[in-house]
Length: 171
Image (cartoon, one colour):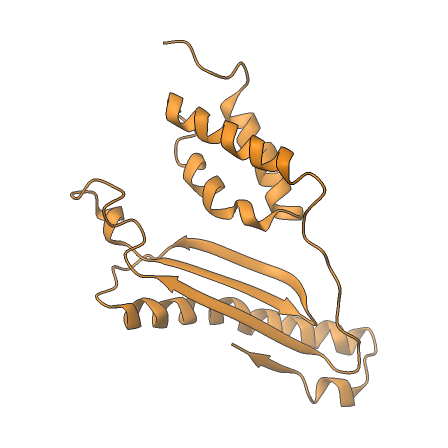
């Protein structure tokens, strides 16, 4: 069977990863799905690439807009969510991936996004509450090292202590 696209599937995925990493965080889920089949893509995966391309063409002038808050204090916000059984009834019933929940989080410093993630949880959650707790735990493993790094960098560049004393993390 002849492929739909006359391009290297892996190369296109790499280019989209570059866009995702720099300005297009909304591609996270779609990109993770098509990346799973990088070594053996089928026509359905090529169709998904075409849909991603159409999305990018339709939102050409858009992307991540960085507008930091007025710097009178330093603050970090973390938005966390979990989707319990996110692939249930979308994947074959005997596939262990079909019962996994999805974790997503967005980490901002002074309203500027600096880290985000959307991925399947490693464990199989038995309830919505368990999926949410696991999502919060995953997000905090990203928040705490970044908080320490931010404090270290802020002190190194000479940000006054009165700005750092109010540095708080909100989840």
